[in-house]
Image 1: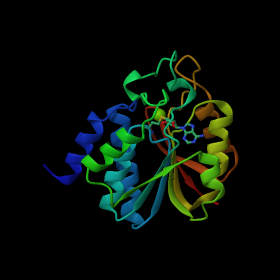
Image 2 (image 1 turned 90 degrees about the vertical axis):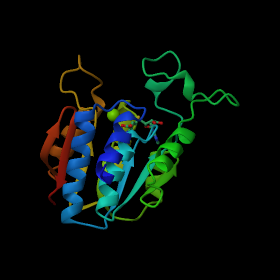
Image 3 (image 1 turned 90 degrees about the horizontal axis):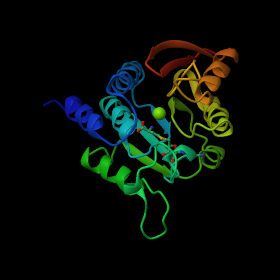
Image 4 (image 1 turned 180 degrees about the horizontal axis):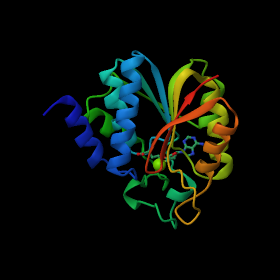
Length: 211
Ligand code: SAH
Ligand code: MG
C-alpha cells in the first residue's frame, strides 16, 4: 500500500464527523496547492480526534509542508453531554471533562506524522493573537456557535498569504441541513472581496486569497 493510501485509510477509520468524500477532497485540494507551493505553513482550527488532521497531514507530508493542528481539546458546545455529538468514551475520568487530546495524539503517532503535524493546545483567538507566521493554508472547522466561528474567521483569515487557501467545513445554505455560522463566515469571506471560491465538495468550500 502506498503511503498516501495508508494515510487516507487511517483517516477514513479515525473517529470524527467528516464524510470520506469530503475528507478525500480536503486531501486533494491541499495536495494540489502544496504541489504548487511546497514547504508551506498550514493550520487547522478544530482538531477533535485527528481525522481531518490526517487528511491534511497526508498532503502536508507529501509536499514538505507543516500542519499546525489547533484545539483546546475540550470539545465545542455541540459535543458536550446532552447534545447530539456527545461521546462518553472521550470524557476524562479524573476531572469529568471531555478531552480529545490523548486520542488526537495517538492518531498522529499511529500515522507516523509527528514530524509533519504540530499540535497547538489552546483557545483559537488567544493562539492567533500571538501567532505572527503567515499561513499558506487555513482550514476552519472549530466551534459552530456564531461568535466562535466569526472569531476564528477574523483571527486566522488575515494571516493567509496571497493565493493561499481558506477551506471552511460544514457549510449549509439551508438551515434544515445544519447550523448557519460556517455558512455566514463563508459569505463574509466572499463579501470582503479578499477571497474567491475555487471549489467545493459536500459541505466543504475552498477559497483563495486574491488581494
Ligand atoms: N476537524 C475535525 C473536527 C473538529 S470538531 C475533524 O474533521 O475531524 C470542532 C473542534 O473545535 C472541537 O474539537 C472543539 O474542541 C474545537 N473548538 C471549538 N471552539 C474552539 C476554540 N475557541 N478554540 C480552540 N478549539 C475550539
Ligand atoms: Mg466539521
